[in-house]
Every structure is written in structure tokens, then in C-alpha cells.
Image (cartoon, rainbow, N blue to C red; front, side, top):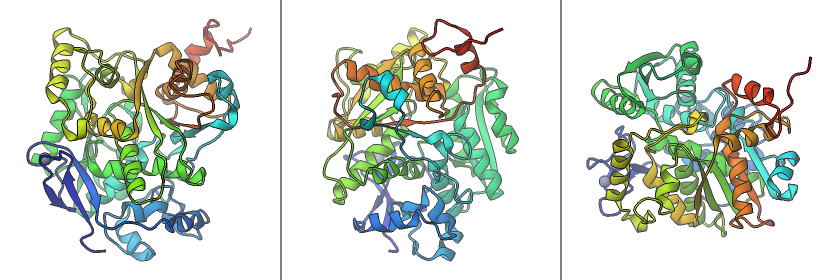
Length: 445
Ligand SMILES: [Zn+2]
């Protein structure tokens, strides 16, 4: 297996390759990287993964990430050797991804207008730090450890910092969290503080904080764990792996995600490309990305709402200038991403190119929903006994919108990803106090 995994630039005209120990998140020309594997894992592993659900005392079988370790074996280790796994693989005692799988939620299905048996919703909020980020943080911190990093670094306003802080505390390494000064409510960083992360305040907006975190990581021996890190993408592949496994590897018609930095879309697309190439799935599910109306970069560009050109991956030749002009236009008009669903309040999605590649491979779609729609989506999930954050509500109302538009057919099988758990206690309280909201149950006196 040695020498099986390597890094490769995603730009087909560039395509520079690097050894797996390489720690920069870009090629030398500034393009994003993919983790690549030379081997072709056998579909017989499906049986192995299924058997590991009875963990027999191994945290690497218990983990919803490392249960699929042969499909993310960038450490190039003997995956059956538990001692070797313990030396390399980073895990929160097997808890990452352990509780996430797809469920039927009848009240959400009624609200959407889809037969209950055709709708699956997968809560990723039931991860130890409360969001899907733990899937990718397990793999990113594994790579950090493999390369001897003493400090992990991220820019974040919430979920990423919570996950990074938790993993860093568990591994006994340092964690720096970059935030735009004065723009983040302290409560959103409470988990990062709790786990002992160092908060670094940066003058400017989130993009400035990310830029400084990337510069500091490079200049001061930090290891970046934002989703531009290709190893984050590897761990997040297990979100669709688990969904597919619970559907007996029969691909659904749709996989639906909220769209923020587009790391999830990128990883879902990569997972499907690999499974298809390896002969594990024949049918390719379509990906639907649901942006907030107030942070709709992907939807605007993909649907040709800017300069009437539909931005596409175009076999690796996307119109980069169109993206630059769109960002210039946002700056010139003073348009800042604005939604109460802060997890997807992102104007410049760092993974937009990988996201476009995923949409091209899966014949995907992108659309937008409003804040009040997201709140309804979030609330109807709650009525099924599941807790999710506002951004996850985008998945539910996005499916509803696409069914109403006839894009998703009524008999299609749909898997929607609920990305995180509620971390802003006042959002549901305010929603339910207003009797005009569709699912509100106002307090009585
Ligand atoms: Zn390159």
C-alpha cells in the first residue's frame, strides 16, 4: 500500500502532484488539491463496513468516519491492524459520525409533500461538537499529526472552531481560531473558548480573517483545518458513504445540502466520483445545493443570474474571471452576505471550483431559500424529535421548493443532510413566540 496516496492539483491544465505529507492547501500556482489513491478498493469491502457496525471494542469500527478507513487510507496503513490504526488515526473515542445515519421524518415529509418512504434526512448535528465538521476534522487532524504539526489553525465563526478546538484539546495540541474583530457574538465561540482554543481577532471581515489565518499558518508552522484543506474533504466523504450504506448502496435520486463554503458539496461529489469509478455504484445521484437568499453566490453564478452566463466547471476550464467580476460587483455594491443562518453566511465560497466539479459530475442544481423558510424547515424537523440548526432547515425547504418546481419528482428518493445542531438558543424561542409562524406553539399563560 505504501506510496498509494498522493496529492494532485484539481486544475487539469496544471495537475501538479505532491507527496501525501505535503501540508500546503494549494499547489504552487494557487489551485486547490485533491487526495488521490492509486488503488481501487474492492466492492467486497461493503460487507466489511457492515460487519464493523458491531464494533467489537474497536473505536475505529465504532467511528462513522474510520469504519470506512479503506476508502480514506491516506496514512497508507494496514487498516486491519488496530495497533497501527491507534498510532495514526485521530478519533474522539470513536464518536465522530457514530450516530449519524438517515432517518424517515414523517412530519417533514408531509410538509414537503413527498411520500414518507422516499425522504431520508441525516442529522449530522449528532456529532460530538454538534456539527458535520467532526467528520472532516478527524481526517484533517490525522494528517496534521502525521506531518508533526503542533498547532492547528482555522478561521471560523462557529462550527469549525468548535470542532477544531475539541479535536485539538483531545490530541493535546494548540488551536488558533481567527475571527473578524467585533463582528462575532461571543456566544458563538463559547465552545472554542471552552476547549482552550486561542481566539485571534482580525480587523476586517471573515475573508480577511481566513486570509490572515492562511498566511500565519504558512509562516508560523500552523496547520490549516478549514475546508480548503483536502484532508477535511476526505473525512466528509463518509457523510454520503453512511447514507448509501443505510440504503444498501442503492443510490438515491438526490442528495441535498445547504450551501456555504461548499466543502460538503465538494466531498460528496468526490465520494460519488470515486465510488462510480471503482464500480461501487452505477447510478449517480444528483446533488442539490440550497443557498440562503442573502448569501447566494453559487446559485447566482450557476443559474446565470450574473452577466447572463451560467458558470460551469466546464471540464476543468471554469470561467474564473466571471467569479472575480462577481466578487468585484459584491464589493462595489457593498453587498455583504446576510442571513440569520450564520453557518451558511458566506459570500466567497472557498471550495467553489470543487463544488462546480461536483455539480457537473452529478448534473446538480442550485437554488435559494429565505430565512423565514429555513426557520420553518428547522422547526418541522424539531417536531419529529430531531434538533437542527437554521442552516439545516435550508435542506428541508429546498427539497420542498424543488418538488414544487418539478425539478425533484414526487417519486424520487431524496436524502437531505442536516448539517448541525441548534447552537443559538434564541432562534427557536423567537420563532415559537410569534404565532404567525407556521409551526409556532406560543407560550400560554
Ligand atoms: Zn495547480
